[in-house]
Length: 218
Image (cartoon, rainbow, N blue to C red; front, top):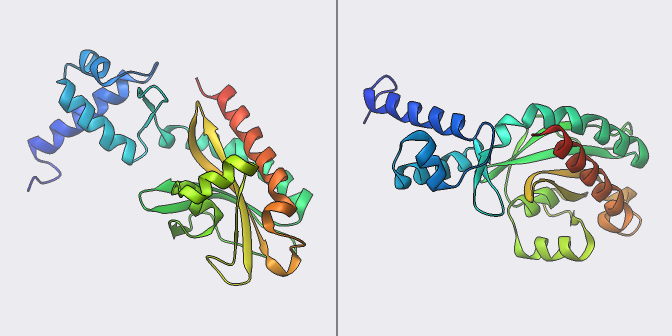
């Protein structure tokens, strides 16, 4: 096995850096990555797919590669915070922003409800997929995707934690889901269902973040 300082490890890092440089200004197909980096098409494609898994690259609808979520995360957090604060203030419930990492989801931003009884998780919390509305959405659960198409949001009632509910909607950039906006609340305050009560507000917040991110990301 190669040590972190081995020539093989250094060569991999050099290739990863070359691929990042190659997509810095514009997206590229695997063959274009190979042309820009001097790698073989198979090597460029294999490394690029691995980099997608770790958030260094993302795929476009056409299959090209672009800089990934890790490079827009700071911008995403800055854009999301005032929107989530407005959502919290309008609903009185806790608003969060979640991203996928492997088979888990991670909370990037959280704005807690001011109420004594509230659903809350600190930023940095990691939960396994697909529990919860954001987990269902980030895991691409078929039923969740059908629900999203029908309503514009995905809900959960007590599926992750008894007594708590949530509703989530996707934050997208150029057709790709980067994150989810989630509103979480005690079911004791829900009138009909999390989605029926709050889904439209959550979907509107997610669209606003998506639009602002599109304008802020070259």
